[in-house]
Length: 395
Image 1 (tube, rainbow, N blue to C red):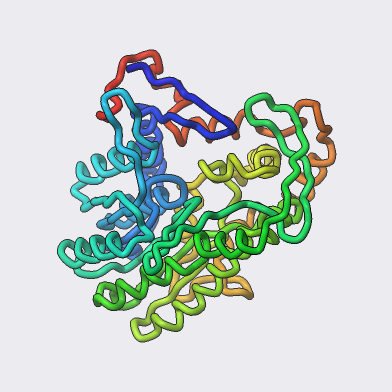
Image 2 (cartoon, rainbow, N blue to C red; image 1 turned 60 degrees about the vertical axis):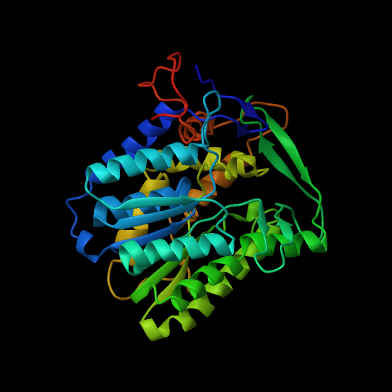
């Protein structure tokens, strides 16, 4: 079949297998060019990535495999392909990654299903025990709109809403490039609580506790979960909104886990990452405008990074640089340090004030935003023939 990109309300409904392979191959190539560094011997050798098929999770898996020759296990929820139906980009990414990893004689396995469930935790623990013995690093990188509580069976749904009052700000329509006004009504109390249940640290802690109970965490174990803070303009809908409450819970969980891992000389961290185009960020009101302006500013200043570059810096300059992981006063790893530089934020703020509702985006990199979004779904690569007849079941 000929696979075309279909986008509805900034959500891509399709993925291209050949393009997803190209995306993964490009990340391998970038990391291979960095292998001259001396950090590889410090990297973990047995890595579990919970949510390792796209974005920061996939990038974490790739950095561990390429730079440290790590054996990796991924857990993610994917839609597999059929004869006339494409898979999720995460499925294609995973197949492409594991094919290349095995060509390099690296262990790489994935389990697809509900990472929140007891059954998945049991299956992963059994696989770790059978094939790896223990793990040295656990990356928690889930971004889910819902969660079924493994104890009660109750379903919780996350929302991206402000708390207390309506939030109004400019945004940009990614398809047309026209500036528009975003109005987001405040969350109800139950929505705040449900978002924390889905996006907070409860499931991360359940994973670590379960693996520890099975004796599957190695001496010196490290675990990291990913977060975002962002600029003041997005605080009402992000840091001070429902998702912010969830991230506060995630940060508290890191401190709890560090205490529980002391007997293994282990530690838990939250890494605050840069704003990047992901399948989730593209649908958050206001964020596309901020990212388009940020991309242009950081590219002009030579500071721009994508997911793989961010995770490379996490591993080499933070988690495995030396014995003391550099953190801020709240104990967080700040990979958003370049994004939040005063000169960067001042220039983004200046350009934000140039925007006018109903007019085209000014001095922003909307093309870069679109390209990043397209490519994480396998589209937008010059080297891929998108008119070719492909079998969506094969890569």
